[in-house]
Image (cartoon, rainbow, N blue to C red):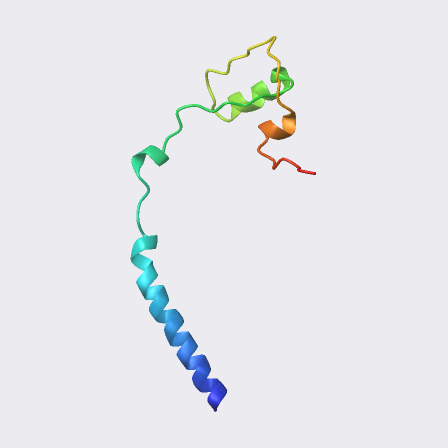
Amino acid sequence: MMFEEEIRVLLSRCLVAGILLVPPCAAQLPDYYKTVNRVTWVVENIDRVGPAWEAMGLSEIREYSGLSVAEPAEHLCGLPEQTS
């Protein structure tokens, strides 16, 4: 009996919390989050990935040859740096 009453109280609290959280969750994103100005990818072989990008509808694919990257690849991928 006591357990059933606790369940009812818990469910009613969850229901009230859910009702209160609905309006903020229904908010729309601002317009500047709905578009992309540009995307930059660094790839080893653009000839391999270029046709796939074009098939996805990407345009203005540019190749910059002769560039070198001073940072390790892990830093560019956003992986956390390992500290020892």
